[in-house]
Image (cartoon, rainbow, N blue to C red):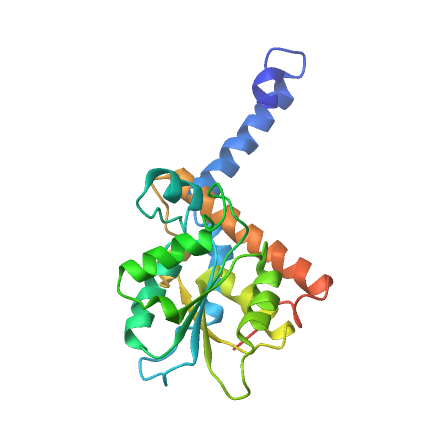
Length: 242
């Protein structure tokens, strides 16, 4: 916008330079692989567990998978962009019928008591056959650090128990770091991948620039979050590893 405005002033040359830079960055970040280059190291950090994984004591699902307000205003459960966290949790609940299911997700935003994201998620899970007495809801957390600490206080894991942590693949390093800092060792179960995991991710151009910009935004958010968590003592290391 500044570049366009400058075209009609004595700074027209600088305006053209700004426009050139702006268009170039838009092409690189929107159509190009900039977002994928930044997000791939995060998504590849924690590979999915093997299929022969021993039955866990519980499955923790981090919030962000459900639009609570939309769900309670419209009726049907409305999944968010990270809805794969919840659908994968439903599959895991069927695979491990003795495991507890814990949904950790934010304050009420659906218009009143028990109209929050966690209760919307519970409705989704019970609708797919998960028994309600298997589901525990943590409804106070506002961020990943609180997810970890409040969930640990809620479930009080016993030594030697195995708990799966289900969250988006790019968010997994920060999630694992926060849980380790809270003294709750978890097994990463990533979902909601944004890249294919092939070499082509690093040079593939997209036809939808909005998708490319969203991936870049997510990647930058996570890298900044990792740095912030390390600097503020909410994670034991900058980039946690398996």
